[in-house]
Length: 308
Image (tube, rainbow, N blue to C red; front, side, top):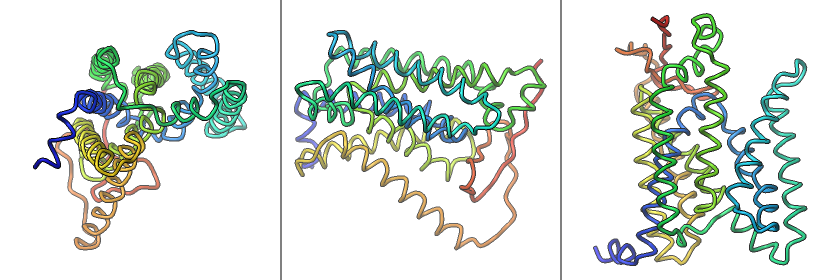
């Protein structure tokens, strides 16, 4: 029992724990839509595409949050603009912006006297250096994310499962996509300076992906993702404390390992059950159907009701 409790008796580990839990909750709410919509590559590109803004902000003595927000805004605008080109798929534009922004960021950082330290801090953060001010910022970000998620739930469901039908029903999938990009930006920008882009992206994708293999309804996916992220935070901090590993990277590794464990268990369950007809959901509008190529054991096709 002491092995478990002793690390969390230290004040900076307690702050790291609360920071990880808040980031896990934010990423669970946003990451669920990212996974269902198939925007993992975009999330990775936005997370690493913030490097130029962060680097410039550091060189100019400005808050890194402002630089990160500016870079994320450029990424979001660029993805939207390139996505309208008729002969290019969306992931081509994302890949080009990803490579371009990351290259510019490395060039800018290379002019700094502390190149290695700055780049490592950007990727991995310093979860053990979380301050009370950082916790308040994460709390505000979580509140905004929760409110937007609740208010936009119906539009997000329409965007995820049938954007064309949603457009005919007046649910404005284009507007919902813009709001979703805003939520991704908020989650990444509010968290990266505490835990780094690697941990943000790991918690944004891995816990929802692990949960979507089992849960049928979107709220349950969000709840499960938050629990998986919280468990990864606790276990990662414990392993980091006793093994002397980097805390942020360890938390991210535990979250990814949780996904592979969930996927392996889901495969074993499918083999044991064999091929049987999928049950019908009681609430199809809130059902979950992961994006291809992943195939759930109980696929469900949600229906979008007309707006009143």
